[in-house]
Image (cartoon, rainbow, N blue to C red):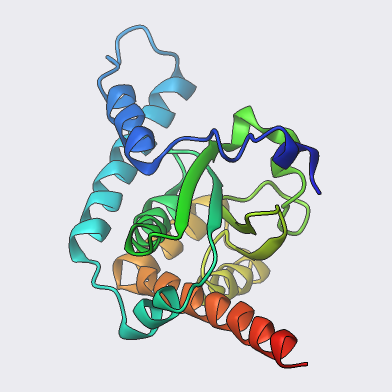
Length: 208
């Protein structure tokens, strides 16, 4: 079992509501007096807040995910490592939050990546601290599944463009365009797949 689980750090993470409240508080920070980097991150936060709000308003859960959530029999804790300046997170986290909200057996807690580097380093993506990263745990700390930092189709697009020589700005814009075209709905599909997989594994285990 992970030491961070024994220390109950995931359990003591932010609720989604507290995370959004802190996000909104950060947006009230005046630009005056900020250096160039701080200004840039404040802009990211503003853009992402609007993106997340649009996703939350537009999202309608699929029947497939609703069934998978209804089939959960034991409590789960969903830990998400993220930051509010992350574009991928702006499109994905509202879907994750609504899925957790739908099941009384899921507790969602959010940890800021930069405040928890030791935990983040256990869930690297190709050696990078890519976010968001969702890790689902059973009550005893057993890892049930992970997801992130973005849907498989978005990752494939990014990999292809990078191989073709796209720079960071081009990669970012291509992903934003993909999400804005409705790609964020793939988060729903992939969450359903993850839940169905662990439920099937549990079914096979209990039938032995």
